[in-house]
Amino acid sequence: MKKYFPALLVLLAFVYMTTTGFQCGSAEATSAKLYMQQKQWQKAEESLMKELAKNDKNEEAWFLLGQTRLEMKKYGGMNEAYTKALSLGDAHKAEISRNRLAIWAMSYNEGVAYYNKGRDTAAYYDKSLESFATGISMEPDSSSTYYVAALAHYAKKDFSGATQKLETALQKKPDFADAARFLGQIHYQSGIDKLEAKDQAGADAAFMKATTAFETAYKTDPTSPDNITNLIEVYERTRQSDKALNLTRDAVAKDPKNKLYRYAYGVFLLKQEKFPESIEQFQEAVNIDPNYGDATYNLGVSYLNWGVSMKEQADKKYEADRKANKGKDVKEDMSYKEKFKAALPYLEKSAEMRSDDAALWQQLGKVYANLNMVDKSKMAFEKFDTLTKGK
Image (cartoon, rainbow, N blue to C red; front, side, top):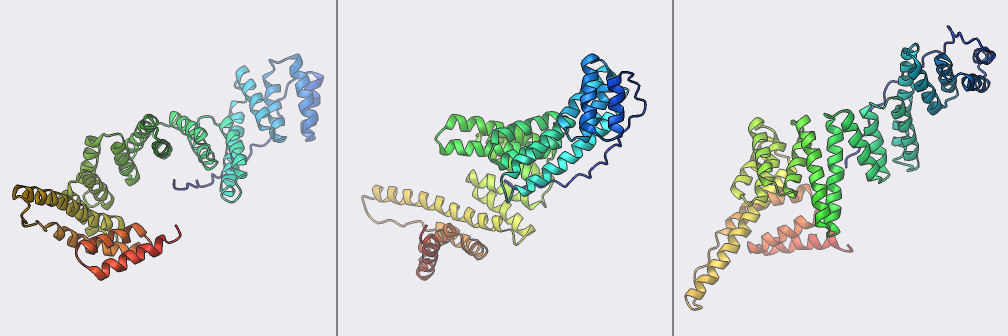
């Protein structure tokens, strides 16, 4: 999962405290006003609570209680007082909105700062979640706050919490592509984990959830290479090859110079064992970007797998012909070696770019052996042994 570090929001300036227009006539209300002017916030809160115990319909007293708690940094209580004030009237609606927005911005910034510190000290993730929770209470429709909170949950390996936050983010903003993609990645990894645990039913359910999320991301932003490749992969996992074919083919048709689309289409065709077609797509990707390592490697793999397939067919035919000729020796079809030879330059170039890839060296060793290139085969297997020694 790639890391995401949102840019800090510009902290909105706090709206200045005002007590003008305060018209509560009780002794408690008057005392609260004086305490506020003197910045004695604890005493102001006590006086306002006494006032509201006598008259809980006093909209202005609730508003001033919210203002007092704002100064005391008791943001939960501030928000409750503001909510009560708004339920009684909208005289202070604009001021309440500005103050809530200011606290939301401050909490968001704090949450992001704590999240970034969490990369070094995990305990900061809890602090970031506390800050994001405050931000959400101030601006409950802010989809971006739910998203960054999901990042913190995920960093803590609280995947359920991350999922819930992302689902809420998408409820608030259905076209939130980043949230949909992140949600899909969580469900997809869950599917992989369940497969490893031999839970096929659980894996299928997780992959279907991932499909829904990735489809949302792709629909929102069909130009994103990540969105298209994620969707191709999950279609394969959910045995929806027709959808994957249409998706990749259409993407290439719309943007034939996009190397990632060419690559994705090639991967799909390779999985379908349509070797000539996959080679065409990988070759186009390499033509667009000669240093495109993944396309270069898979170009070699396409030729190699094609050769392996031809060899299997040739071996079966050879045995069948020998049986038909009662054990007499017959001519063996060696044309598959041409595909192995075609694979070599791409696999060798890949080995130069990925010199520490043990599996690739093992692969090369087998190809060299099939082509009777003894010295190179020995070198490749020695490289493989060196890389895997002690593992």
